[in-house]
Image 1 (cartoon, rainbow, N blue to C red):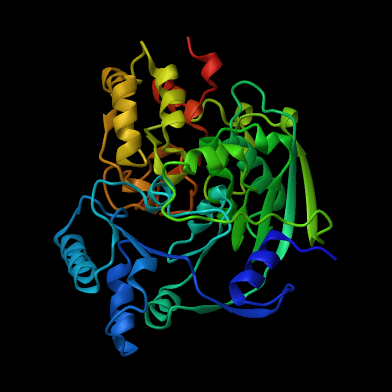
Image 2 (image 1 turned 135 degrees about the vertical axis):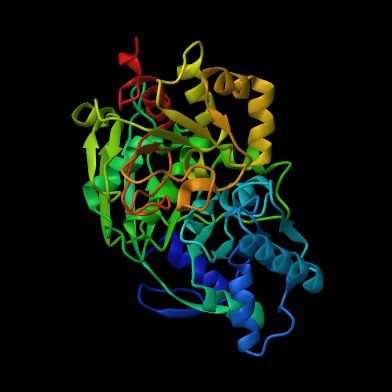
Length: 418
């Protein structure tokens, strides 16, 4: 009997022939990701008696969650991390301004097919877009990796999602992700490995594919994986930091669940407050007042996302009383958007463009809403208080809808703009 991707890669990393769901294996990650929480992990590491990390080359550390530092406390936190990186001789360090960890990890060629990425962030499954097994872990677990170089994992059951056909015009992979989450629920893939298959997935650009493993975290998935193809290999050609060996699931692999979706049946969708699985058609939510629009995050802050928004905003102005914040996912994206003229479009429309990072996604700075305000966002979460204000509302949508809503001052389909 064949094995799924998760079963095969965890067997390889554990040095055994086969694994099965529920089995506990001890593995060493190829990459251990942490961000601003590195300072908190360091405190745990010291309490464990740790002094030197097991393998400095494994670690990739990013300053992105509160970057640039909005408070003295954050600045001191960053200072401690910079000192730690220097003391431990960690080569892969990305300071303020480089961008969001999940995006930069891919750009820097550190998330590779057939490799194991463990990160102290819940959206670490994002790296599955490269064909890696990427999973979020806790801070104590990361401190253990620092100390010992390995960690035990439970082999997850696997869900296979098959997407057939191409998305209609105006529909994006964000809508596909919301459709699946709305169908399966916020716990629909709890501690599962999710594999994305089908010609509907293969037809997506690399930027659009990345939305799928990123958003799968909102279903409780342990990891999410897209089989790497020539598109991935071409992207990594000048980026990969190491040689790699892709791992594919066996054709006769056994899955705990198989779900099939038709792209042509998917329409623009909105995740309504205050849960990501509270998904409704845009047509039902149209007309909802918007105070703020936010375009960015590791979910939809790539160049294609900015291009979608710029197309909508070109020659238009934001609605009176509505503000828009644009944050490119990385400095690479920012530069490309600048050269393409998108930044000028945003500024001319009245939007604010901030430095690469997470910004208001988790309520740190650069766009925290006021009490009672409504934000439409291209991010991945809309929990109560997620953007820093408990008594505010967050709607999630694709970049085109976010931009159109900023122009209209209410949630609207781009085609309905005058």
